[in-house]
Length: 337
Image (cartoon, rainbow, N blue to C red):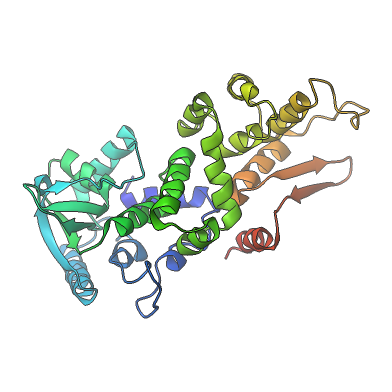
């Protein structure tokens, strides 16, 4: 699988990434503090060339990237892979070894189709990665001696923001890493959740709900980080009045393969003292598998609770929202904006 196909397949899995990268990194003529000109436009704005891309076209593309980088006050060059150190602000903590090996194979066969972005530093190793640590690791694994890079100056706060934007765009952070990165950005930038959401193209409720995952017990956090349970399950577990029941419920979710809806019902039952809620006077009809799966996909895709009810002749889908801003975010996702 090529790097292009892999990125495309990942992007297709998730639809809750706000307004997309075009909104995250503005056009060059826009004047916004902290989100100004970035060489990331070069890296993430264009598509990956098709398999069998001709050498002449590759050279033309490299020349174009070099000109674009220079226009943005940066420079394009080939750098020794051993003259580069990872980004100390990198929010991502783990790199899937199988995915890394797959990318290394692609790079070995076709070359690196998108340059990384680095900044100069003092010391024996002269460059620090701003964006592209995964590509750098794969290039080293492929045994290549140099890597194409765009060199530009940037401060530490911009380093963290750029690394977060790249990982969110590529859908590589697990929910706990994303939550920790949001929290770090709030502290680094000294901004409110609403202001942070505006900067990175996410709604305030999404940021709030993601950061709340950090309130989970460590055992539950590990399951979320390992993607053993979804963020939807985790948000349901956060609804427990007795937080001491969280780890036991998370273990039950895994053991019994509970859906998000079933987890929410379990939380309701536990919060009521273990007794069936009074409003349920008759046994609930089991939800068909197709409806349960759809509710789970919609809940993850829209980043909110979604309930599907199926009757004898018709059914309904209920999408929850918290305020006008969250409502408009969900409508935008449904309309494909």
